[in-house]
Every structure is written in structure tokens, then in C-alpha cells.
Image (cartoon, rainbow, N blue to C red; front, side, top):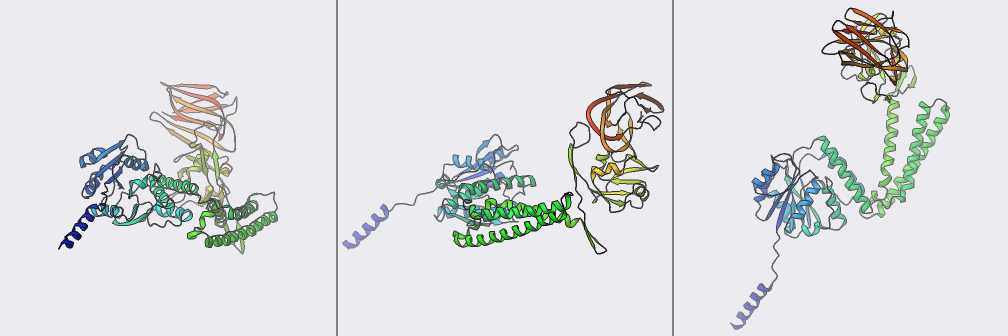
Length: 565
């Protein structure tokens, strides 16, 4: 009996002296930016979790009632006066948290439950891992699938999580001290990469279905840029590209070969003074070089794959892999352009590429956008019920100085100018008679610079509408741009039109105001004033070193301007 009591006493003493398991406090950080509709619900769900000791909502510069809703729901709120980004919001919450374990949960989750929150945090409380990240059932994220996963596979192939950008994390606060928090959307993938490289245990936890607000395309673009930046900076920081030189020479030579192929094609089609045989030789040499070195890259990569731990092939050549891809894409685009310009007829294959025109205006004349890419335009016949209409794309109108509902006279027939039909952005539709007079055939392709040659000598009528008057400007198309004058027309001291035109010094030009016809002798930089009934019409000419294709009709050739009051 005595010995039994002694044994019991020792056991009780052992139990009392055994070190108790340390209680771990839990904080939940909820970053929120304009989430007034959901933040209170998320806070309410988190409060249902019995072992959560602290709930912090970081109001990241919201312009709605996010802060008030979070306070009403019972959360502690920390507010950024301006929006600093998700990473800054998480970092603010982490620094202010007073607990041992911290969970980060988005504020826009519609179907969050306490079980989902528990699933995130319990593996850490049980000592199974240092960090948990979530995966959940939903449509695959566009940024994840198109940006994050490919880059992670290249630089960090050992990271094979289904959803590296899930956004919901939990971690021991102690290990977060070793993590570099990005200020923006790159924070999620940055935590994953840092944990992997630093040897911090991280586990992906399935929490079931999650319903998020869908981000607009603009936000996805921003997110993708920030995720790419984070992965690339981590790849450089952790030496994932230091082995590039092992196969860098082969990749560079592959690019040289592809560039020679491109140069050969360009020479064949666009450089007339270089003999065809030289262009072909350059292209063939480029093909041989590119094939040879691309094969060398593949062989070397296989060798490296066998030698590199965990098959991390891409760490040795990814830094210069993108230029190779760009060269291949450029070559494919050029080849597809030539294929699209190929015509096979009567046993003859003809490849006739047509270039677009880059238009850059260096003057201050009112021609719409100062820079644009225009043409080429394909000629087609007008549809049956539009025999008095010429349809042309907006870029062609800008080149000719007209707009929709203006008119053009071709061979004494007046046609109304209308915009191209839907789905025909570069189709120029003309009635048969106009097409024949302009010596055009169906299927002809016209570069933007050739438009003025095609329509040379045609009379254009361009209208300006004002609440007090309608002004019609008449001019013929010149085949080339020549120095011109800029002029502005005022009616009773109110500007109603601003344009350019080719005037001849000391020539007479006519202006018609209602039924009243008057004229003036053009002097460079001179101003002209007409008084009609109770109205004053002024034309102010300026020398702005402008060129134009608008040939203004002189006296006996027609009115320069028609003003209807």
C-alpha cells in the first residue's frame, strides 16, 4: 500500500512538472478597399471562430462606408488615408497584430464560413506547418493561369501549388519576420516564394468553394504586372538565373539565326535595290543557323534537366529565353502577313504584302489624332441601294479632310460620303461609275498615301455646323502635300471653323453668304472681313508652316466657302 501511494505521488508530481503546451493567440487581418457590402459579413463569420482573439480590418483608403461597416461589425479598424495596395494593407495589419498566429482573409468573400477559417488556421495551431495558403473551388484565375504559373514553372519549378495567388494565408508571426512583404498584388506570390526558398514549411489547404467579386480587366492587368515584377525580382534575388550562361550562347545564336530569316524576308519583299538571290541566301543561312542552335539549346537543356535538382531546367536559361520567344513570334507574324497577302491564280503564286501607314502630324492643324496608323484599303463595289454613296473608313476620311455626310464630285456626279459598314474597317466601297472613272478594280489595295492620288482633282464639300450657321468648304484634292495656309472663320466674333488650304498669292477667291457673293484678294497672313446684313464674317489667315492637299478653287472655278445663316 505504501509503495502504491509513492508511485501515485511520483506520477502526480510528473504531471505537474510537465511543461504545459503554450497557448497561441490568433489574429485575423482583413484588408479592405471599398468593400462596404461584404466586410461586415466577413467580420461576423470570423467572430464565430472560438480561438480567434483579434480581428483587424485594414481600411486601405476606401471612399465608401467600409470603415463604418467594419467598426459596426466589431472589428478593430486601422485606416490608410490613401490607397496603398494590398501588400501594404497586409503589412500594416501584421505589424499591429498582437497575437502569435496571423491569418489574412479578403474582405470580398461572399460565402465565407467559420469552418473555412478554421481549416486555414488549425494546421498551424497543431504544429503541422508554419504557413498555410488556401486553394478553393472556382473558375481558374486568369492572372494565375496566364502569368503566375508559367513564370513559377520557369523559375521555381518546385513550387507546384494549384492556386499560388489564392490570397488567403495564415502564418506564425515569428516566421513572417523573415518574409519581404510586397506593397501590391505581388504580396501573395512573394510570400510563397520566400517561404519556399528560406525553407519555411508551407502547406496548401483546401477550404472548398469561394465566391469572390470578379476583378475588372484593368485591375487584372495591374495585378498581372505586379505579379510578374515580384516573380522576376525574386528570381534574380535568389540566383535562379545565374546558370544562364551555360546555354546563353546557343540561345543568342538562335536569335541571330531567326533575325537573319526576318532580314531575308524583309529584303525580298521591301528592299528593291538588293538582288532577290541575296535575300534568299540571307534567309536560308538564317534558317540553318536557327535550327542548328535551337537543337543545341534543346540538347543542352535535357542534359541540365538531368543534373539540376528537382528538374529545375529553366533556372539556367530563362533570363534570355524571352528574347528568343519574341524573335520567333516576330518571324511568325511576318510569315503570317505574307501568307495573308498570297494569291494563287492560273498556276501562279503571287505574294503582295501591303503596309499600313504611320501618320504623325508635326503641326497644330486640326486633323484629329496627331498620330495614327492608317490603311491599307481594299476596293469593293457599292451595294445595290447605295449607288449615290461612297463608303470609306474614318482613317481615309481624315486623310482626305472630310467627314460623314460630306460630298464628293466624281465625273460630274455628286456622291455622299458615309462611314465604312460594320465589320468592314478597311473597305472602300464605290459605285461602279465612280470606280471606273478613278481607274480602280475590285480587290485593289490602296495604301493611305495613295488615296490623294486616286482622288486627285475630285471636288470635296466639307461642312461645319453651328447653332447660328452652316458653313460649306469646297476644295479639290491635290496629289501631294504642299505648303498651305491655316485659316479660322468667325461669325460675329464667334469661331465656326478652323482649317487649312492651298492658296495662291494675289489670287481672287469667292465667298457666298446666303445669296450674297463676295470675293477677296489673298494676301499671306492677311485678314478678310465681310459685312452682311447685321452680321460680320471674318477670315483670319495664319502662316503655321502647314502642308495640305486641299486645293482651294479660285474665282470662276467655284465658291471657296458657302455660308448659310
